Length: 168
Image (cartoon, rainbow, N blue to C red):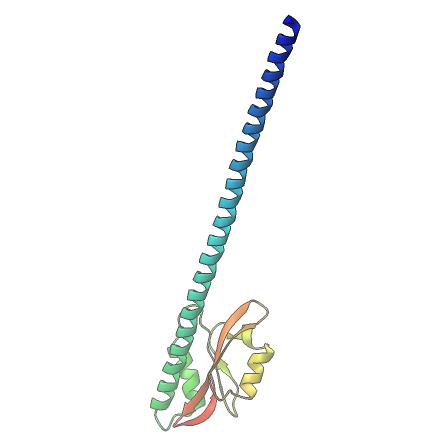
């Protein structure tokens, strides 16, 4: 009998040790699971914030492009009657440099296009060339790939005295 009691105690100890390791393992697994859930939540939050920032930045760029187009059209309509729209465009782009990161290209029907610094990157894009040949009836906002990178483009008709004479 004394042998059976010792064996019974060691069985209880083994059971307690197993339970202890199992409980420790469970706690460890729960901590790891909590870490993984937090990591996934942080990645999702960072993704949402990045998308919101990108969207806000794009809306700001779109508004700036539209403002530049309106300014050009207003200045073109206020130019002296003796000045051609083609010479006005060249003069305007030289005297009114747009904000950093903004590129302007002006094409007047029957003349070559005029652009400011950085506009050469857009010269070979098929969508831009199409707009230069056939100006859109209304402003078109689109992202185009110009080889060196993507550009947000606003193709806007130039209207002088209510008549379309080119594209900006």
